[in-house]
Length: 347
Image (cartoon, one colour):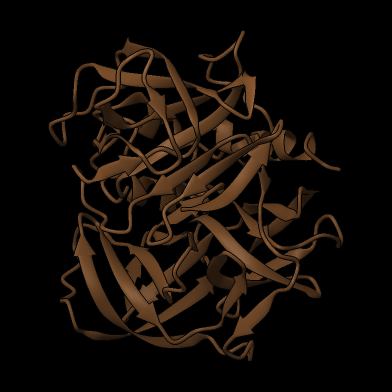
């Protein structure tokens, strides 16, 4: 386990064979820089979920998650509240696992809490993960109100690959999931220990991109301490959006319309994460018509979008909007509202 974020004297940990995300989500705690998703390296539902904190389980709270009819989602989910040993006024709020532990149990960093489940908050391309927030013990349950998180990393950023501005990159399809392909890509990545991710250019600066581009309409670039608000952000040689604020060592941006092509097939978007084991992967969100194969050599190109973003959103969430209110809300252009939230974080 390795420390990935902290707040109020409490450190959150993640498994070294996994990956994490602060910004690859449409939900408000992430937009508020107050949540981190901790993913299992196996990418398998049912895998054991290790505790991100040391402390005592104070509550196992049953609630009804959003319903979904495109897979067998649980009707009732258990939310865990763990009193943190390093600051007992802070509780960790943990979602998306089926717990083994019960109220009163002591847990250590890395000890099993339960196993990862798939619930109605997830989209078809969402991998198994736990959602973690640090909360006041007097206000642990609301959707908003988590303490701001500070990513934990060194200040020495290293680039793996040339930022040459070319538009197409070669790769190999390593894994296929529901509506996504995991592509091992020969493209520029960046390392900011312990995080490794696709390199992004923010004005004259460089960092690691984390986010769903463009389908979640916003993203973040870790490792950017200074720069200009409204700076252009580029990945893979193409512009993806505009910086709205600089906060806690990250540039937070709203996305412009962008088109992802794999072997000429226009895809939904890119899902970018922070790997903890230097994997040069990008996750390509696929249209329902895709027919890629594992081991297939592909060329990936990112271009400025030629159509309105809302057109892409309708394609991204095709077939989902009938089933849950969250996907329906994501069809709207939310960028101005997101920008207002991001600007409130400016330091």
